[in-house]
Amino acid sequence: MDMDVHSNKKNNINISIDDILPAELVREILMRIPIKNLVRLRCVSKLWNTLISDPNLPKSHFDLSLAPSHRLLVYPDDSTKPTTVDLDALFLDGPSKTSTNVSFPSNKENQSDDEFYIFNSCRGFIALFEDPHYIVIWNPLTRSHRVFSCEGYKNYSPMRKLLKRSAMFGFGYDASEDDYLVLFAWRNTRQMEDCLGLFSLRTNSWTTSKVTLPKDPLKKRIISLSGVFLNGAIHWWIAPRFGTGIGIDSGGAIILVFDMIERRFWEMPVPKEIMTNYHPPGALVELGGCLAIWFSNFDKKTDIWIMKEYRVQSSWTAYKIPCFFFRPLYLSNDGDIIGFDMLKSCLAKYNVNNGEMLQSCGKFCGLNDFCMYTESLLALPDDFMEGKE
Image 1 (cartoon, rainbow, N blue to C red):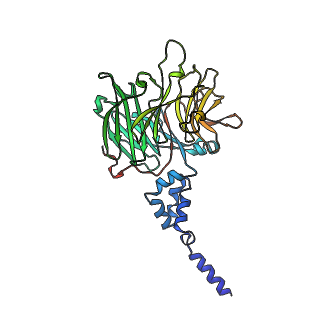
Image 2 (image 1 turned 60 degrees about the horizontal axis):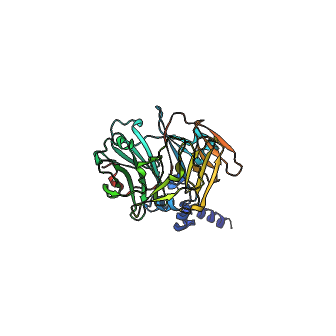
Image 3 (image 1 turned 45 degrees about the horizontal axis):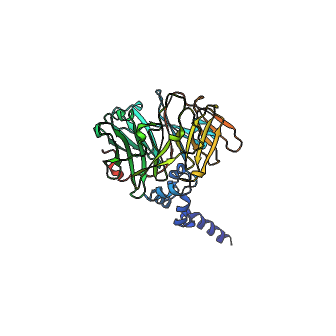
């Protein structure tokens, strides 16, 4: 009897976790683990390492993850390094335990962080402009990146000349081609025509074409240079220029949309209920996978309109935040809106249930640029070309 017990114990010791759980079940479990913990699990067993290293797992994990990890890339305008902040843990652990200093990837030997401009993010990648004429597509988690040149592109060199003109920038994903695209649209004032430039990271090349933009938006005031990528399209908030009076007529404001698959522009109307006078002009943001418009009002509060069902005008829902210049960044799993209190230079949380504001202890004085992104292990098409132009 005693020998049987001893034998069973010995056999149990030799049983590994791979003998207990089938590989299919392990893979389903891995796809539901937060991305920040997934990489650490490679050391559990050879099977787990193989499954996590599978090139198909990052896409499945990104599409199916029940607990995506959201981070904020903060770029101060002083001498301090760019920083990423874990917003899911910020209000629990404080900024000191949730912040990490990073360095931007560069195409130059003597790189300085003050030579970068943050555009936007898509599927875990961040689009950066590096003086004098480089675009950098960068995954902060895996540190993989691609750099390509815009020098001489349609006589806009350095790129800062383009940024100061009436132009739009976009970065998004074409699911039909499994390709990431960088987009520039601008008005050719000499020939009085709208132009579109697209850079494909799969083909590593530029294409240029003439386009027709609704209502000549490039003649208006473009509030957001960088578009918001959502539902397979890039979105820009565009409103008329200020007149002699105060405020903007919201009847002339539109959301301009570029469909990544169909390669065409179309316009989306804004909520009719938006007030005709507000300050400053509004801007677009993604909140919880939904398109949203925010603007500060003369009542010293911030209005946020969220389109809860994409392209359904009746689904626009308004929230009034008791904070002036509150710039929303992220909708937490608890339904709270986290954003910048721009006047107090800190991050704050708005509880949508009780209407209270909770300020963090984080301070972001001298803020230059920032960008929200969702962490992923995704790779760019043909990553063997990394760093090449």
